[in-house]
Image (cartoon, rainbow, N blue to C red):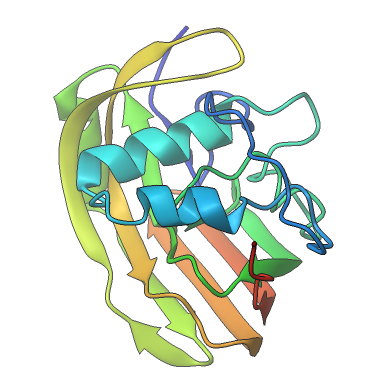
Length: 211
């Protein structure tokens, strides 16, 4: 139930977070982290465009469906960053406000996406007010990355209380798949009284080939 605008992701969010409605695929043989997508399934969906609507729908479903205490937005150290990731993209999150330092393992086949700052609101006007004061930045290995401004857009997403409809907007980052090895990623955002920062230490790994 949406009572008022609530910021998330690189911000605070309306509903607590978590698993996508898409069931996880079985792990590839030899793959050490079964919570990550099967590379076969990734191949099947990687051609689907990551449009603003799809990106926000996937992200809010992921961030709004987690079990209590396991939200990727509440995550303080990265222990939940691999939970219920959707196929075809690896999502990252900000915080409800304040700073978090997370360590995650990421497959080298997937693009990475997430908000520097974002929000859902009951109407377009609430999103517009939020965006009027929104600022953010994304740094990959200390190098600035482009942020995409997504204006108010009505989406339907999954949550722990069933499907929800809201207007979504924000400043969003999308990265091509990263080279194997160690990388750092920082998402910072502000809007009004909200200030959020998420620092990721990413270990990018190559998925084993399937027969």
